[in-house]
Length: 167
Image 1 (cartoon, one colour):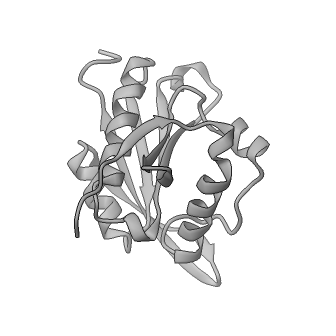
Image 2: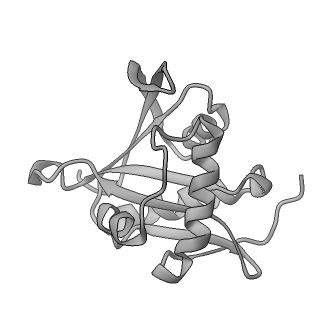
């Protein structure tokens, strides 16, 4: 598959409808998230860090998005965030996810984050590989973490520790 020219830009409210469509596509896949619906912009915006959110585009089309969300309100965890990366089905395998995750890692370190974590369904092999290529390591498998459509699902817990921040 041919790689496309990808531009990475901050995710803004005007991107929401394209971002939401890509998120809904991920939800429909059954291997991206436990969520069953996409929230409205106001709720999504409130749950994700303002400083670390991006869209990937080619020409005028949004191909994917990535964002970080805090894992806890406790100050001791202020440098830890959870990663979300979603790529439109037709754009997968073209370097979009890699570009988005690279932007998140770089931005996270600029904003003082020392640990990024990701929870990925074991069936989502491409996402696990993408995260490994970005320096994440598998910490373990959280067995039967949640029930989805009557089926208990495991989640692979991955982590990336910064070599530059929090030392």
